[in-house]
Image 1 (cartoon, rainbow, N blue to C red):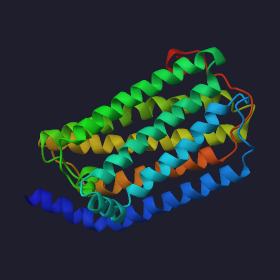
Image 2 (cartoon, rainbow, N blue to C red):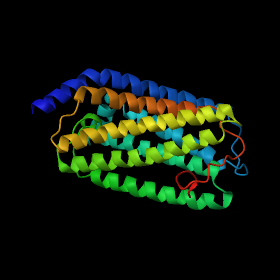
Image 3 (cartoon, helix red, strand yellow):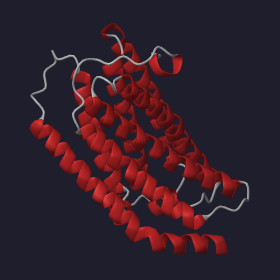
Image 4 (spheres, helix red, strand yellow):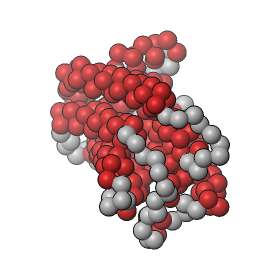
Amino acid sequence: MTLLRERRMIWKDVEPLTGLLFGACAVLVAVSAATYTACAPPLSRDEPFFVARRARLSIFTASFVSSFLAVPSIAKTADGLIERPGIATLCSHLAAELVLLGMQIMNVNWTHPTACIRKAIGVRIVIACCVMATVIWQFHRINVPSEELAYGAPDSSAVATYMLMQYGFLTVAGTATGLRYAALSCAIWRRRRAAAASLAAIAAGTLLAVVYAGSRMGAVLAHLGGLPWPSAVGALVVPTAGALSLHLITVGFTLPLRGQRATLPIRPWAAGS
C-alpha cells in the first residue's frame, strides 16, 4: 500500500509534464499533417508510391490520436464519458500500433519489388490485426483507470498480461522497424542526404519508442518479481521517451521523402519479405 501511494504521489508530480509533452506532440502532429496535406501534390493511383502516401496520412492520424489520448486530463475525460476505465489508454496503445503498421507499410512500398508489395503488406496487416484483437480481448478482463494503466504497476495478473503483451509487441516491432529505417537511411545517404536525415530521425524516434516500451516492461517485470524499480525515474523517462518518439517520427515524415525507390542491403534482417 505504501508503494502504491508513493507511485500515485510521483504520478501527481509528473502529470503536468506529461500533459505538456503529449499536448505539444498532438499540436505538432496536427500542424505537420495539415502542412503535408496542403503541400503534397494530388494523390494518384498511378504513382509508384501511392500506398506509402496513404500510409503516411494514416500515420499522422494515428499519431495524433495516440498523443491526444495520452494527455492525462483528456484520458480522464474520455474514461468518464464512455464510463469505462482505461479506454483512453487502450485507444492510445492501439493507435501506436497503427503508427508502427503504417511505418512498415511505407518501408515495404519504398524498398520491395512491385510484385511482392501486396503480399508483404498483407502479412504485416494480418499480424497487426491479430495482436490488436488479442490486446482488446485482454483489455476486457481488466478494470484499471487510464493513468494507472499507462504509467502504474499492475495490480493483478490480468493487468500484467495486458501490459506485457502490449509493450512486448511495441518493443519487438519497434526494434525491427527502427533498424529497417536506419538501414534505409544508410543505404541512400550518399545520394539523397535530406531524405536520409529524415529517415534517421524516424529511426531515432522509433528506437525511443522502444525505450518507452522497454521501460514499461521493466517496471512490470520488476513489480512481478518483487524487485525494486526507480519509480521517479520511470515516471519521467516513460512519458518523455514516448512524447519525443512521436515528435521525431512526425518531423521525419513531414520532411521530403519522395524519389526513386531505394533498395536496402540484401540481408535477411533488412531486406526480407
